[in-house]
Image (cartoon, rainbow, N blue to C red; front, side):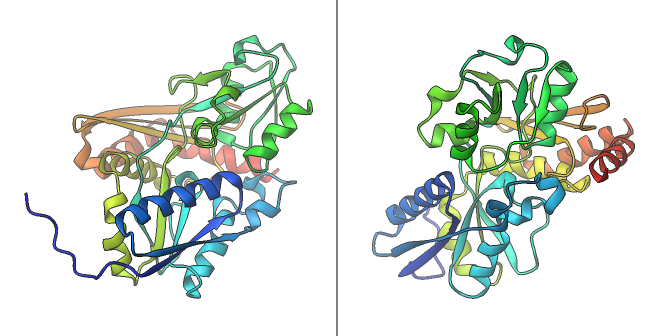
Length: 320
């Protein structure tokens, strides 16, 4: 098999924009190291930034503008030429990127599951009535409320270290976090139990890292192509197709999760009211190469279960 013919010369310098949280910097450093291995003569720098999403911690994301709050400043840095690319947790990236930007690569996905974290209890089943569980996700809130209506869900904002500190100081009996972040930061011991997809279906793109670039930089697309992981990209693209169809953001409890084995995709999705009292769910299987069609098939199945009516209830509850 012949090696791909490169149109552009290897990069001499690249600047990566990143949030300054410890997890975000880990992700940026991971991409930096991958690129350094590919282009050893390239100078690679990381531009750390604080976003509005990092600054607003006293309100739920669904109340203050959603996921885009974590990426706008990074996009501004690219637009102004201060950075060439930005590294994100994919679940923080809006379904519709602003004009002039594109996703160049999806890296191999980490563990996509939710994680139960507690100092005194081993699982959600062990929590007594009235125990306070912290999460910033309406999806997690809906799924927990549906299965454990005796628990109390309180908002939990801040970076991973801040959330763990709030747990440790006794503000919550337990918190729910993405397993991927804990593993990437070398904190798997904090995980008391994994919530399997059958119990807590992950968010679209959970556990995946994405690289965003200005869409008028084709050389970046070529340089970053080796970092793209095909099956991870297919899976999260199907998930994001479902989320996009329903106006997916942190303002609605929506889950979408795909697995790919030997070219076959299994895609599951659900929408719910925040209180978990109404849930629509669907799943399909098919050729992973037809990921967008599979995503639309799930959308159709959810629509036939009155998903739009459920979302209308969500919006009304959130607006209260």
